[in-house]
Length: 221
Image (tube, rainbow, N blue to C red; front, top):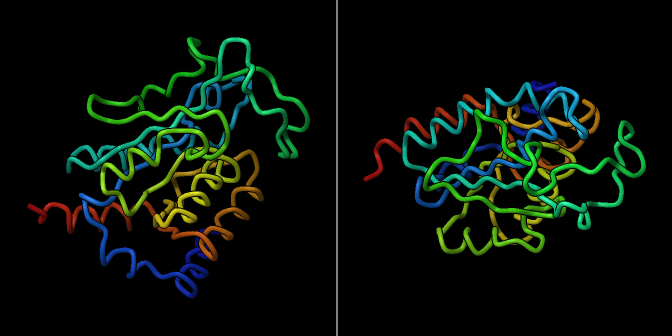
């Protein structure tokens, strides 16, 4: 499937325009919802595919840290009574009302250990799918001078896609590493990536993104 997606990318949205202005001072890594209640085996809202992307996102995170790039962690957290939790999900594997999860002060609301925020990295707490909705994300992005967002995390078709959509509406350029997102089903995941590359942003392999960073950011003063 990656070959098909990359072929679609090359025909409708090649990477060169993005790379022309992809600098350390105008680009940030955005990691979405890599939390234990999504990723632990047997977790209440488990996204099994998300576990496979943990080491891939870690590679990208290490490259950003190596070059002093900006990192923003977006997490979902609700009060202990679950008051602000969404009422439903449309995933065929998670129909109807879901279990209470991602509650403030619980282990499940924490990021998985390999992706915990480091000193100097930012955390944005959200209550809905989009990282922009009723949060300080755009305040950070404007203050940082961000123009490009490397977006990864779970789920591709919910929080990742909603955040990319809202970023597009606000004029930001997003690129998603193919190995850096996951969802409940392959069909949901791939449909969202197709829609994003056609209408909302870029997709790339992890190696393409890392190569671009390594070859250009080390030369920046």
